[in-house]
Image (cartoon, rainbow, N blue to C red; front, side, top):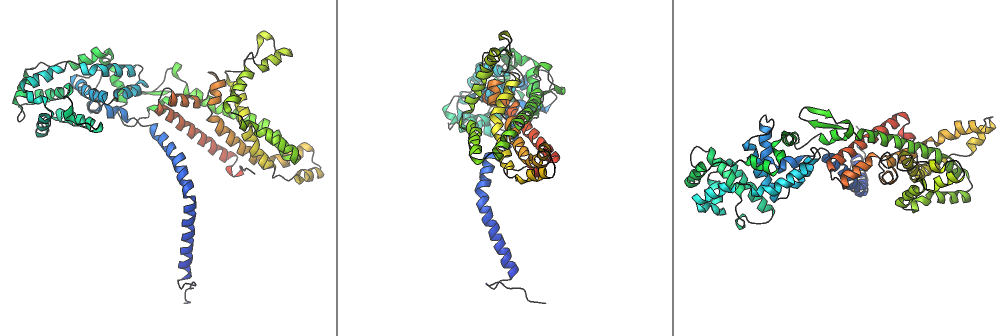
Length: 504
């Protein structure tokens, strides 16, 4: 067998080549690492966060952990009993201290109107419930219960016997730890004594060292916490809020996606929303349809301009190209506002039509705050994005091809349609993808000139992000829009072929 080939440094040639190739790969990875990191931070991470927010729902169970555990542990129907209301009292007291009850109310308000005000009102009232009866009875029997140190010792010694008390005490300590405070610096709250009272009344015998507290609890008549909640807000005595809490108890929910397609979660299952609340499917259809119309309009207007740019002498083509790029040097809001001035019933276009007699003064055209206004304004804004890819491709088409076709007997139209146009299709494809994706996500122009009939789904996404603060629904709408774009992109690849898209 022949000896293995040896490199100049004495190592086998195969190993030396593999080492050199590995160094080249590492060098290439080092060069593209900053770009990969940039894409990861600015693109992948935001999209991943959006996908997570569209199903995230942990605020309910994190804010009312004991209540949700009791609601989901058994077959709860209608308004629950005192045990659940007691757990809600403890949960809501702690949530109010952390200012989380308003966030929970805002979340549930997306599903049940009025939940936000309900939680705000109850949060203000929960500290004034008559549970101080338990506090007075236990501290009168043994004043040592007013001291946090005594509390800590008794709870630690009887944690198994006093499960509610131990849980409430540990959660209360966690609140103080999060605030950087010491629990001994504040008075003990009534909800702690309520938990202790419930444990003592359910215990068969007095826990170690708690004879006086046990006797006081047994001798004290219970306070109806359920009635206290109903007095704070009568809706606590109705089953709707409890059904909503049970439905949205899991940490992850499909509710946002259901709302995005005009469905909703109900105790009976998934149901279609009432007809007067069905808006999102209409908006999705309108967005895709109008984006296609805008893309077609840009092709029809941009193709002749791109052809002129590619075939005029360089001096004239440069002047025309400057005019094409001029909109990029003007503010988007200025251009959109200009169309609002031009298209309104007392605007420039209607005035000209009335002046030349094509339209009567009392029959002025309605061209603003509708789909027509959105299509016109967005076609004007996105037209350069269609012209430039087509122009760059047309520049690469040799003029000799047309001359050759004509010399073989083809007419001007036949030479254009069978020789020139097929070679310009990649530019049309690139411009169409660019314009369509930009159009489907636009929201400033439709907001200004679209009115109620010309707005896109992106306007609702912007509304939920900036106004209603329903980020979960906004994320779900954005995810569906992203999937729709990817599906259309896939269909375009199958029909036209993405390999045929070129920028010159």
